[in-house]
Length: 271
Image (tube, rainbow, N blue to C red; front, side, top):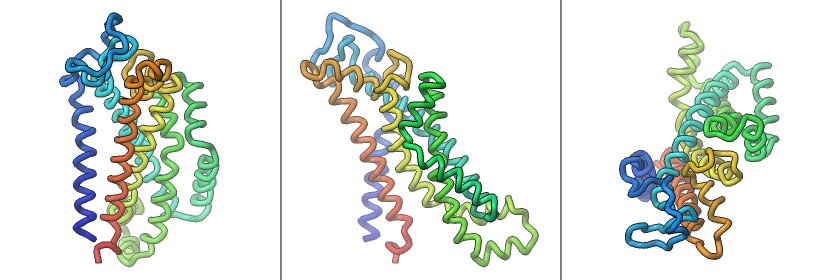
């Protein structure tokens, strides 16, 4: 069982990096300018020069797909980083101190969880204006609550351990106890949660871009490509198929990596 879990973890990790590396290198490896329009070659099917075909502006779909992956990475990692940092800090404080502070924080978390995530993000982006930074802000507003609740639950059990109690009685500051003795022992489920949330963030960003609330018009984005492709779905289905497949595959790989990490960190599977 352990060997099998490691195999799945290794495979999903390789697939994940196969998504990241081309996205990072996209400006140097794209075969064509993703914003170049060749109106005389609209809706061309896949060919040797354009392996994924061309869209209604004559732009190369492969080039736009690679640049769109950078948008997904940019939004995904910023949202995970900011919301994860806020959620971890809030969860540590809430679980460690408990009492009225814990009650107030958890009630705020409950209120935010009562809102449908994507609908709240749509409302916030509509108010702030459609651009990537506002998309990150909108997705972070709700993104931190899952980390806060997860970390708080872990801290409630860890803070009663003998090594934590010994650190408290030795006069070490609360901040040092939380960072040096509690955080390393609660970080594993947070890593798993972040992997699953990355998949959700990619879907959310694509949904907002599909609705015209993400990247500015003309900027390559998987959601924007889907939105543009829906108008020519019958005569040129490849315009929508390839960005849709990209979203599906990346989300599937992120979820597979999250499942593999969860199994790998599970102590019951290591016996």
